Image (tube, rainbow, N blue to C red):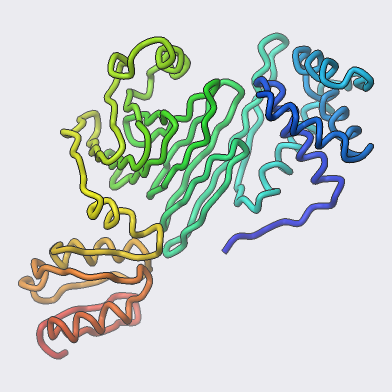
Length: 352
Protein backbone atom coordinates (compact mmCIF):
# COMPACT_ATOMS: atom_id res chain seq x y z
CA UNK A 1 0.00 0.00 0.00
CA UNK A 2 2.75 2.44 0.99
CA UNK A 3 5.70 2.94 -1.31
CA UNK A 4 8.85 3.44 0.75
CA UNK A 5 11.99 4.88 -0.82
CA UNK A 6 15.24 3.73 0.73
CA UNK A 7 17.92 6.38 1.23
CA UNK A 8 21.63 6.14 1.86
CA UNK A 9 23.09 6.73 5.31
CA UNK A 10 24.41 10.14 4.20
CA UNK A 11 20.99 11.22 2.98
CA UNK A 12 19.38 10.09 6.24
CA UNK A 13 21.91 12.14 8.20
CA UNK A 14 21.11 15.21 6.09
CA UNK A 15 17.40 14.71 6.62
CA UNK A 16 17.76 14.35 10.39
CA UNK A 17 20.09 17.35 10.52
CA UNK A 18 17.53 19.45 8.65
CA UNK A 19 14.88 18.40 11.16
CA UNK A 20 17.09 19.44 14.09
CA UNK A 21 17.83 22.82 12.47
CA UNK A 22 14.13 23.49 11.93
CA UNK A 23 13.49 22.75 15.62
CA UNK A 24 16.30 25.07 16.66
CA UNK A 25 14.73 27.73 14.44
CA UNK A 26 11.38 27.57 16.26
CA UNK A 27 13.04 27.25 19.68
CA UNK A 28 14.14 24.03 21.38
CA UNK A 29 12.94 22.69 24.69
CA UNK A 30 15.55 21.53 27.22
CA UNK A 31 14.73 17.93 26.32
CA UNK A 32 15.19 18.60 22.59
CA UNK A 33 18.50 20.35 23.25
CA UNK A 34 19.75 17.24 25.06
CA UNK A 35 18.54 15.05 22.19
CA UNK A 36 20.40 17.22 19.65
CA UNK A 37 23.56 17.09 21.75
CA UNK A 38 23.42 13.28 21.97
CA UNK A 39 22.79 13.02 18.23
CA UNK A 40 25.68 15.35 17.33
CA UNK A 41 28.13 13.46 19.56
CA UNK A 42 27.46 10.12 17.88
CA UNK A 43 30.06 10.76 15.18
CA UNK A 44 31.91 13.36 13.16
CA UNK A 45 29.53 12.67 10.27
CA UNK A 46 26.61 13.74 12.48
CA UNK A 47 28.37 17.01 13.43
CA UNK A 48 29.33 17.75 9.83
CA UNK A 49 25.78 17.17 8.61
CA UNK A 50 24.35 19.53 11.24
CA UNK A 51 26.86 22.28 10.49
CA UNK A 52 26.27 21.93 6.76
CA UNK A 53 22.51 22.31 7.17
CA UNK A 54 23.07 25.29 9.47
CA UNK A 55 25.12 27.04 6.81
CA UNK A 56 22.24 26.63 4.35
CA UNK A 57 19.66 28.06 6.73
CA UNK A 58 19.33 31.79 6.09
CA UNK A 59 18.51 32.88 9.62
CA UNK A 60 21.10 34.40 11.96
CA UNK A 61 19.17 33.33 15.07
CA UNK A 62 19.69 29.69 14.13
CA UNK A 63 23.41 30.18 13.62
CA UNK A 64 23.74 32.05 16.92
CA UNK A 65 21.80 29.36 18.77
CA UNK A 66 23.92 26.63 17.22
CA UNK A 67 27.11 28.43 18.16
CA UNK A 68 25.87 28.65 21.73
CA UNK A 69 25.08 24.95 21.82
CA UNK A 70 28.35 23.86 20.23
CA UNK A 71 30.95 26.64 20.71
CA UNK A 72 33.85 24.55 19.42
CA UNK A 73 32.29 24.09 16.01
CA UNK A 74 32.47 26.74 13.32
CA UNK A 75 29.69 27.12 10.83
CA UNK A 76 30.93 27.20 7.26
CA UNK A 77 30.59 30.28 5.09
CA UNK A 78 27.29 31.16 3.46
CA UNK A 79 26.57 29.67 0.08
CA UNK A 80 24.91 31.44 -2.88
CA UNK A 81 21.13 31.89 -2.58
CA UNK A 82 20.26 29.65 -5.56
CA UNK A 83 22.28 26.76 -4.11
CA UNK A 84 20.67 27.35 -0.73
CA UNK A 85 17.16 26.89 -2.12
CA UNK A 86 18.12 23.66 -3.86
CA UNK A 87 19.72 22.20 -0.74
CA UNK A 88 16.79 23.16 1.47
CA UNK A 89 14.29 21.63 -0.91
CA UNK A 90 16.25 18.39 -1.10
CA UNK A 91 16.65 18.20 2.67
CA UNK A 92 12.96 18.71 3.30
CA UNK A 93 12.14 16.00 0.78
CA UNK A 94 14.34 13.56 2.68
CA UNK A 95 12.62 14.42 5.96
CA UNK A 96 9.19 13.81 4.42
CA UNK A 97 10.06 10.42 3.00
CA UNK A 98 12.18 8.98 5.82
CA UNK A 99 9.16 7.83 7.82
CA UNK A 100 7.65 5.98 4.88
CA UNK A 101 5.27 8.84 4.19
CA UNK A 102 3.39 9.07 0.90
CA UNK A 103 4.34 12.53 -0.33
CA UNK A 104 2.92 13.54 -3.65
CA UNK A 105 4.05 17.15 -3.66
CA UNK A 106 5.79 19.90 -1.73
CA UNK A 107 6.61 23.56 -2.22
CA UNK A 108 9.05 25.90 -0.57
CA UNK A 109 8.05 29.55 -0.93
CA UNK A 110 10.54 32.25 -1.80
CA UNK A 111 12.47 33.72 1.13
CA UNK A 112 12.38 37.42 1.81
CA UNK A 113 15.55 39.21 2.92
CA UNK A 114 14.24 39.77 6.42
CA UNK A 115 11.41 37.64 7.83
CA UNK A 116 12.19 34.19 6.42
CA UNK A 117 9.58 31.51 7.00
CA UNK A 118 10.13 28.18 5.27
CA UNK A 119 6.96 26.16 4.70
CA UNK A 120 6.63 22.49 3.85
CA UNK A 121 3.57 21.45 1.86
CA UNK A 122 2.78 17.74 1.65
CA UNK A 123 -0.17 15.86 0.20
CA UNK A 124 -1.28 12.53 1.65
CA UNK A 125 -4.05 10.40 0.21
CA UNK A 126 -5.67 6.97 0.24
CA UNK A 127 -7.45 5.10 -2.51
CA UNK A 128 -10.95 3.63 -2.30
CA UNK A 129 -10.87 0.80 0.25
CA UNK A 130 -7.47 1.87 1.59
CA UNK A 131 -6.61 3.23 5.04
CA UNK A 132 -3.24 4.53 6.23
CA UNK A 133 -1.52 6.13 9.21
CA UNK A 134 1.04 8.92 8.72
CA UNK A 135 3.45 10.43 11.24
CA UNK A 136 4.34 14.08 10.73
CA UNK A 137 7.64 15.73 11.65
CA UNK A 138 6.29 17.14 14.93
CA UNK A 139 5.02 13.76 16.15
CA UNK A 140 1.39 14.29 15.14
CA UNK A 141 -0.30 11.12 13.88
CA UNK A 142 -2.97 11.20 11.16
CA UNK A 143 -5.08 8.20 10.16
CA UNK A 144 -6.82 8.54 6.80
CA UNK A 145 -9.98 6.65 5.96
CA UNK A 146 -10.92 5.37 2.50
CA UNK A 147 -10.66 7.74 -0.50
CA UNK A 148 -9.33 10.64 1.55
CA UNK A 149 -6.88 13.45 0.83
CA UNK A 150 -5.20 16.02 3.07
CA UNK A 151 -2.71 18.82 2.43
CA UNK A 152 -0.25 19.55 5.24
CA UNK A 153 1.42 22.95 5.49
CA UNK A 154 3.90 23.46 8.32
CA UNK A 155 5.80 26.64 9.08
CA UNK A 156 7.65 27.86 12.14
CA UNK A 157 4.58 29.78 13.33
CA UNK A 158 1.69 27.42 12.69
CA UNK A 159 0.62 23.95 11.57
CA UNK A 160 -2.23 23.75 9.08
CA UNK A 161 -3.97 20.81 7.42
CA UNK A 162 -6.63 21.02 4.73
CA UNK A 163 -9.05 18.10 4.50
CA UNK A 164 -9.68 18.04 0.76
CA UNK A 165 -11.98 15.04 0.88
CA UNK A 166 -12.86 12.03 2.99
CA UNK A 167 -12.22 11.45 6.68
CA UNK A 168 -9.26 11.66 9.04
CA UNK A 169 -8.38 11.10 12.68
CA UNK A 170 -5.88 13.56 14.16
CA UNK A 171 -3.77 12.74 17.22
CA UNK A 172 -2.06 16.09 17.68
CA UNK A 173 1.38 16.55 19.23
CA UNK A 174 1.49 19.42 21.70
CA UNK A 175 3.38 22.53 20.61
CA UNK A 176 2.45 25.72 22.48
CA UNK A 177 4.31 27.85 19.94
CA UNK A 178 2.45 26.56 16.86
CA UNK A 179 -1.32 26.04 16.75
CA UNK A 180 -2.59 22.98 14.84
CA UNK A 181 -5.62 23.73 12.66
CA UNK A 182 -7.64 21.71 10.16
CA UNK A 183 -9.53 23.48 7.37
CA UNK A 184 -12.61 21.57 6.22
CA UNK A 185 -15.48 23.14 4.34
CA UNK A 186 -16.09 26.65 5.68
CA UNK A 187 -14.49 26.19 9.12
CA UNK A 188 -11.17 25.93 10.89
CA UNK A 189 -10.79 23.32 13.64
CA UNK A 190 -7.98 24.29 16.01
CA UNK A 191 -6.75 21.58 18.37
CA UNK A 192 -6.13 22.35 22.02
CA UNK A 193 -3.95 19.28 22.74
CA UNK A 194 -6.36 16.69 21.47
CA UNK A 195 -7.55 13.71 19.44
CA UNK A 196 -10.41 14.32 17.05
CA UNK A 197 -12.07 12.99 13.91
CA UNK A 198 -13.19 15.10 10.93
CA UNK A 199 -15.31 13.81 8.07
CA UNK A 200 -16.10 15.85 4.98
CA UNK A 201 -19.46 14.35 4.06
CA UNK A 202 -20.20 16.72 1.18
CA UNK A 203 -18.66 19.86 -0.30
CA UNK A 204 -20.16 22.05 2.41
CA UNK A 205 -20.99 19.49 5.11
CA UNK A 206 -18.49 18.48 7.78
CA UNK A 207 -18.74 16.37 10.92
CA UNK A 208 -16.41 16.81 13.90
CA UNK A 209 -16.11 14.26 16.72
CA UNK A 210 -13.76 15.01 19.64
CA UNK A 211 -12.53 12.03 21.66
CA UNK A 212 -9.88 13.77 23.79
CA UNK A 213 -9.25 17.39 24.72
CA UNK A 214 -10.99 20.30 23.02
CA UNK A 215 -11.34 21.72 19.51
CA UNK A 216 -12.09 25.35 18.68
CA UNK A 217 -14.26 25.98 15.59
CA UNK A 218 -13.63 29.32 13.88
CA UNK A 219 -14.05 30.95 10.49
CA UNK A 220 -11.24 30.35 7.96
CA UNK A 221 -10.26 34.02 8.01
CA UNK A 222 -9.66 34.02 11.77
CA UNK A 223 -6.08 34.93 12.67
CA UNK A 224 -4.68 31.72 14.17
CA UNK A 225 -1.75 33.55 15.80
CA UNK A 226 -4.25 35.80 17.59
CA UNK A 227 -6.31 32.84 18.74
CA UNK A 228 -3.17 31.11 19.99
CA UNK A 229 -2.12 34.15 22.01
CA UNK A 230 -5.58 34.53 23.52
CA UNK A 231 -5.66 30.89 24.61
CA UNK A 232 -2.84 31.51 27.05
CA UNK A 233 -4.22 34.66 28.69
CA UNK A 234 -8.00 34.28 28.86
CA UNK A 235 -10.52 31.56 29.56
CA UNK A 236 -11.23 29.16 26.72
CA UNK A 237 -14.90 30.04 26.83
CA UNK A 238 -14.04 33.66 25.98
CA UNK A 239 -12.12 32.85 22.79
CA UNK A 240 -14.03 33.83 19.59
CA UNK A 241 -15.52 30.67 18.12
CA UNK A 242 -17.29 27.53 19.30
CA UNK A 243 -15.61 25.11 21.67
CA UNK A 244 -16.26 21.37 21.24
CA UNK A 245 -15.12 19.14 24.09
CA UNK A 246 -14.31 15.46 24.49
CA UNK A 247 -17.32 13.24 23.83
CA UNK A 248 -19.10 15.86 21.73
CA UNK A 249 -20.04 15.96 18.06
CA UNK A 250 -20.57 19.00 15.84
CA UNK A 251 -22.15 19.06 12.38
CA UNK A 252 -21.52 22.02 10.08
CA UNK A 253 -23.36 22.71 6.82
CA UNK A 254 -21.87 25.66 4.99
CA UNK A 255 -21.60 28.43 7.58
CA UNK A 256 -24.32 26.92 9.77
CA UNK A 257 -23.26 25.10 12.93
CA UNK A 258 -25.93 22.73 14.24
CA UNK A 259 -26.38 22.26 18.01
CA UNK A 260 -23.44 20.40 19.54
CA UNK A 261 -24.47 16.98 20.86
CA UNK A 262 -23.01 14.90 23.67
CA UNK A 263 -22.53 11.36 22.31
CA UNK A 264 -22.33 8.10 24.20
CA UNK A 265 -19.29 5.83 24.27
CA UNK A 266 -21.24 3.28 22.21
CA UNK A 267 -22.00 5.90 19.55
CA UNK A 268 -18.35 6.97 19.45
CA UNK A 269 -17.27 3.34 18.96
CA UNK A 270 -19.77 3.00 16.11
CA UNK A 271 -18.66 6.21 14.41
CA UNK A 272 -14.97 5.36 14.70
CA UNK A 273 -15.18 1.61 13.98
CA UNK A 274 -13.58 2.34 10.58
CA UNK A 275 -10.28 2.87 12.39
CA UNK A 276 -10.28 -0.90 13.07
CA UNK A 277 -11.49 -1.68 9.54
CA UNK A 278 -15.06 -2.32 10.69
CA UNK A 279 -18.50 -0.81 10.08
CA UNK A 280 -21.23 -0.95 12.71
CA UNK A 281 -24.91 -0.39 11.98
CA UNK A 282 -27.60 -0.11 14.64
CA UNK A 283 -30.92 0.29 12.87
CA UNK A 284 -29.99 2.44 9.88
CA UNK A 285 -32.11 2.13 6.70
CA UNK A 286 -30.55 -0.25 4.17
CA UNK A 287 -30.20 2.54 1.62
CA UNK A 288 -28.11 4.58 4.07
CA UNK A 289 -26.04 1.56 5.17
CA UNK A 290 -25.23 0.56 1.59
CA UNK A 291 -24.19 4.14 0.78
CA UNK A 292 -21.70 3.99 3.66
CA UNK A 293 -20.39 0.58 2.57
CA UNK A 294 -19.88 1.87 -0.98
CA UNK A 295 -17.26 4.33 0.33
CA UNK A 296 -14.91 1.36 0.87
CA UNK A 297 -15.28 -0.37 -2.48
CA UNK A 298 -15.76 0.25 -6.20
CA UNK A 299 -19.06 -1.65 -5.98
CA UNK A 300 -22.33 0.29 -6.30
CA UNK A 301 -25.61 -1.09 -5.02
CA UNK A 302 -28.92 -0.87 -6.82
CA UNK A 303 -32.06 -1.64 -4.81
CA UNK A 304 -34.75 -3.00 -7.12
CA UNK A 305 -37.58 -3.07 -4.57
CA UNK A 306 -38.37 0.30 -2.99
CA UNK A 307 -39.55 -1.37 0.21
CA UNK A 308 -36.05 -2.75 0.82
CA UNK A 309 -34.55 0.75 0.88
CA UNK A 310 -36.09 1.46 4.30
CA UNK A 311 -35.38 -1.97 5.77
CA UNK A 312 -33.44 -1.44 9.02
CA UNK A 313 -29.96 -2.96 9.21
CA UNK A 314 -27.96 -3.84 12.35
CA UNK A 315 -24.68 -5.67 12.77
CA UNK A 316 -20.89 -5.64 12.45
CA UNK A 317 -19.35 -5.76 8.98
CA UNK A 318 -15.79 -5.78 7.75
CA UNK A 319 -15.46 -2.65 5.61
CA UNK A 320 -14.36 -4.39 2.41
CA UNK A 321 -16.14 -7.75 2.86
CA UNK A 322 -18.89 -7.49 0.23
CA UNK A 323 -19.43 -11.26 0.05
CA UNK A 324 -19.95 -11.40 3.82
CA UNK A 325 -22.50 -8.59 3.55
CA UNK A 326 -24.42 -10.33 0.77
CA UNK A 327 -24.49 -13.60 2.71
CA UNK A 328 -25.79 -11.79 5.79
CA UNK A 329 -28.56 -10.10 3.77
CA UNK A 330 -29.52 -13.43 2.27
CA UNK A 331 -29.59 -15.35 5.57
CA UNK A 332 -31.29 -12.69 7.69
CA UNK A 333 -33.61 -10.95 5.24
CA UNK A 334 -34.01 -13.36 2.29
CA UNK A 335 -32.57 -10.73 -0.03
CA UNK A 336 -31.29 -11.91 -3.41
CA UNK A 337 -28.49 -10.29 -5.35
CA UNK A 338 -27.27 -10.14 -8.91
CA UNK A 339 -23.77 -9.01 -9.90
CA UNK A 340 -23.27 -7.21 -13.20
CA UNK A 341 -20.13 -6.73 -15.26
CA UNK A 342 -20.08 -3.01 -14.41
CA UNK A 343 -19.44 -3.27 -10.65
CA UNK A 344 -23.12 -2.98 -9.83
CA UNK A 345 -24.90 -5.33 -7.42
CA UNK A 346 -28.69 -5.43 -7.65
CA UNK A 347 -30.72 -6.34 -4.59
CA UNK A 348 -34.26 -7.68 -4.58
CA UNK A 349 -36.71 -9.59 -2.35
CA UNK A 350 -37.40 -11.91 -5.27
CA UNK A 351 -35.11 -14.17 -7.28
CA UNK A 352 -33.68 -12.74 -10.46
